[in-house]
Image (cartoon, one colour):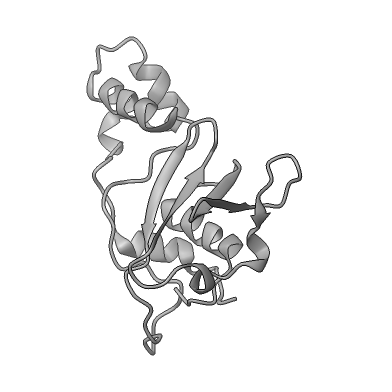
Length: 161
């Protein structure tokens, strides 16, 4: 990720890397200040005018919150800023773990419940959850599966700012 990436673009990168649909509000919290889409009611600083590298140095962290109802909170650590490598499309996902939870599943507690429901064919909500996810069988649900290649495929349509 370039240090010059604006926070609104970083939001897009996170959405694509996760496989989410950008259906909800979000905010970045950096040193107690919230950045997001400017809205007089919420008092966010404008993420469209703020570059990541201007706020965070190597080793620093911020919190990215997505979907204020489900409250998905992600701790983002800037490991280091490096010169871009030739031949790679940026942004580029190097590693990760676990499949992205589906939108609107109820945050971390709801996702835990969803995994339990799908693991139990006798559960009263098992069939409804399969339908909601568009799955024919719970074997298609793989919460531990993650491949950087799949994330990078989703990221291909983004271009450098």
